Length: 168
Image 1 (tube, rainbow, N blue to C red):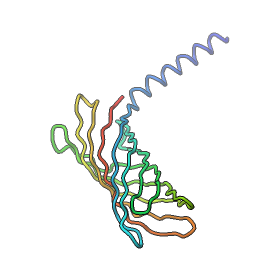
Image 2: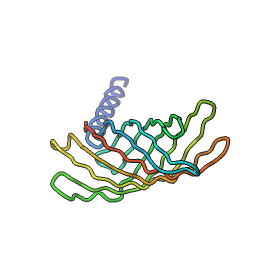
Image 3: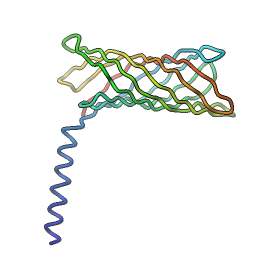
Image 4: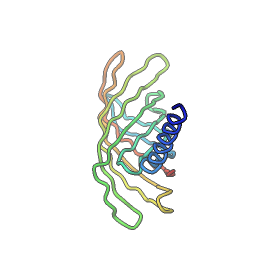
């Protein structure tokens, strides 16, 4: 009886791995970030790097970003998730995408910290080469952000990104 259960578990595990490898190929890669916008008083100037992850079969894109804010002398970390509503091909290798999503994160100063949350509206272009192995992309988003901390404020950010993804 134990051998039958082990064989069943082994066959089930192999089946899940094979299905997962075919159904969930992922693209992952670095991207550079530049964010501008305005808060209630000043212009926002942020730059940094992030990691972008995209599922090949579903129009979901996630990114984990770390940025430095030059105008406020702060460190920012965020996680964004976008769902592409439109993704038509406009050439042999090029496609346009547009969608919406959400972003959460934090801003860290020397003596204080803020929690941030925002909806996102994103659009951009991607170029896929080498039979779907390599993707270059550029995108911009509009992100009305609420910062909550010792005092709350509203920011309007426009993050711009460029990067690559390798699909496995």
